[in-house]
Length: 279
Image 1 (tube, rainbow, N blue to C red):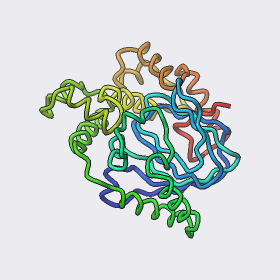
Image 2 (cartoon, one colour):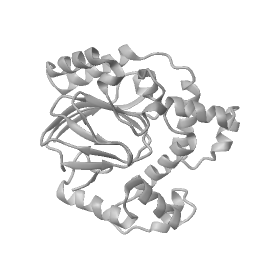
Image 3 (tube, one colour):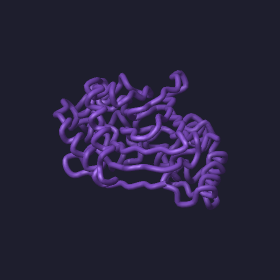
Image 4 (spheres, rainbow, N blue to C red):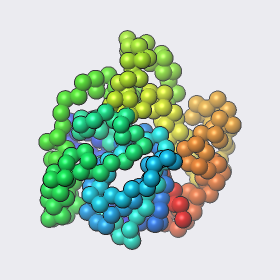
């Protein structure tokens, strides 16, 4: 599978972690992506793919691509035998300047590019990418489209600052103290987060804490679960295990087994590290 990525130029780099191009055969027909502190935009250039965004949301088919705000539940992706797309991994607050609706309306409910930007704009963008000379030119086209759609968003500075503090602490900061230090009430802070990110500060911190634990985990070696839970800021190992099941549907030990399977069957794959096979 071919995977090309790069960081966009300013000011997009303050909103987006990277732009990427993906083409080839997926490692598995179905993958589950545990919730992570990030949003996602995909412009699909191949056969339609399927996404289920939550336990009470029906699986949807996406031909032009999809937009996903920071999730609270795992996403299930169903891929065709060959996939091809251009997309962006977006910081939790980074999608807001490109949306015409509050992010909370899209929480755990992926929508099509057409629903966000309109049918004509979505079709024109896909047509331009289909005629591009290669992955780097496709990334430039997406970057230009995002630059053109970027608009000033009220309250983004505060939400971005507070989110960055949450990220820097791995989600362990006391949310009440965070608002007090910024001089805003907990209600005002929660409203801003829900509008621009789609989740509350507490929920974002919880996702950051889980992500920190996962990225600190080496699936190839022995795991000291009690130490890992403590370093990630969990109250105890039981709390840690509960969070693993809530985020992945797996116990911590089963999660490690699945990660090992991915590495064994697809060593060095671009997807290894977060998505988990469902098959």
